[in-house]
Image (cartoon, rainbow, N blue to C red; front, side):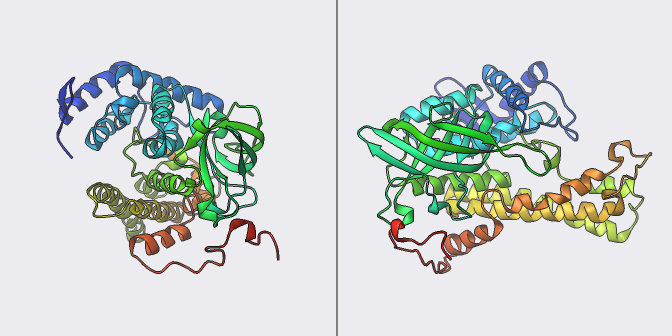
Length: 424
């Protein structure tokens, strides 16, 4: 990485860029308490409208898409500038929910695999705050085997006809375009007959429904495709080589989940449930700050948090210089999941019964009740599922980074139309 960037327009050091950002943020963005950021309910359209409004401000101020190329609406700067901006914007309200999946997953994938027109249209629109992007990957009949999708795309003349269904699509209700993986050839092995499409979600032939979770949240969606028509300009990458695009997409997702993407703008958590637990505050609130056992628990969690940040930096640099393969982003994804579980477990261990019973602490109003610790514990496993399970992450690390033999697969090399599915 360099300390300055040179273009036909300007030469600006990272320090000068940070100073300029500091002044602009103070004049143009709402201030927040970084330890208690505003809660963005991803299931509500108002949260996305607000995020797009803030994104438009960033774009107008010249601080949007810092690491995206200039020709696609970004600033064309390296990660040092994004990190500097992230440090400066910590005390300001930012459009953080646009990071995932719009920028760190979908726009990054289009940048790597899309056509020139797709890059100029979709990436630029996202950076301007005009569009939101999402993923359309998982299916009702599928488990963790993404290559086994059965949503089909059949070619009729110059038109692709899409039929099938997708599910667990994060925030698809708020999106304008989605990256959809479909099967275009059933006569070849499953990985060889897939194609990725860029789908406008307001097109005829798409029915979308919100999925209501047990806690009442409706962030996820399911989509049904009934004769959706797309042109060749919707294909991302090459026909029947969609697995290459999906693999790149998963690479970006795993980096994004762990916090290692250069395309993420801002460093605070997207909502309160993603903020690291305040173990020291919990110990003080429960009168255990002098307890050696509690000190040990808190210290272990804090140490793990520091190591995670160092791992993110190491993996990012190593992928950049080629000493680690792109799949090494999975290391960040796995370590993030395990760190999150440890931090949440530690918080509940310190909170004790206060984490599950409504017991207030008058001397610590910010921690009163502590029921959020228990509620958060109930969703501790989400980090081990999103972006592919931790078990799959370990397979990727073993097979594609360490070079271990691949697991045996009964459908390897078998034409997909001959693979037995849903049969006992």
